[in-house]
Length: 355
Ligand code: SAM
Image 1 (cartoon, rainbow, N blue to C red):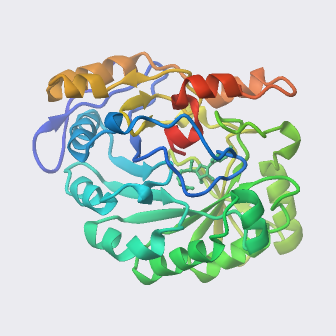
Image 2 (image 1 turned 30 degrees about the horizontal axis):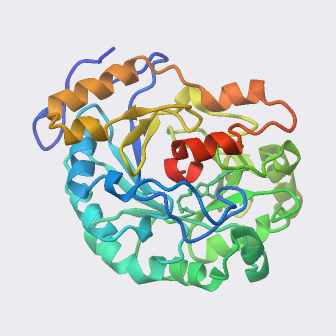
């Protein structure tokens, strides 16, 4: 199902691919590595994993060829993620190449911030427009318990360096886990205000790899709003203006924050995001059980039109509503993917898919 051809500013032409539920192909999240320097309990609690073989990792040339195919089908927002994207050597070089790609309107990165102080200026110079830093707590002891690493001060230094480097539109993503950090919501908002950065509270999701997830640990959007209303007074919801995953709200003093309520109020109906793993597996949904291998065709010499047709063919049939389906299918005590399946197929892991 294609819309009419639309021209892009830099010339050439591209099609707008639309899926089986009428959703465009708008945003591509590219994971640069499955490795991470934290071990957050809600994401990758183990020390060791079945890692992607290094020889399978896409080179930057291969990432560019694939991204160009996506852009020719309507993708105009690209986000680099991981694992931890700043663990990938030369990440700023890839940023520079992506920033120069006609048709990419928004180029962002999601990072845990540990290495951000080291790279903030080179990322800005390379053309990164926005950075989202994951920060779940302002307390070093909690950070250590949650991430199993003692690098909280480095994350805070990363946030500071990103602001100093002028990486505008910074966001702070906080996964709220009941009994772990649900008493820090206002503190995190105040921190964000000082940076400045827009804080987004994310409901704990039972994605692959979240082997410690349970429904009791989910601190819901309603609870987040109730807690912040008790602290600040009436909160007003802003109209949803984009396909962004967060619903946005305004506090009485005018400051804005977001909530990503993928667990209790999924937004599949407007989801235009898909994900490319570091080894070239393309996933149409965060909850997808399988994906399309794009590495093999790229390495076998597929040209731009071949790649575009492959991607368009899959997107046209996409009917995934992963988070909505999970909402209906959850049974007590059952995680989305069990440990044995994760060991067999690392593509099921959140840290391989990228958030
Ligand atoms: N390492 C980078 C980082 O920490 O931002 C990028 C990858 S990480 C997988 C991307 C995002 O996914 C992070 O904001 C993280 O908090 C979020 N995430 C991971 N597991 C999650 C879960 N079970 N529920 C909700 N969000 C999760």
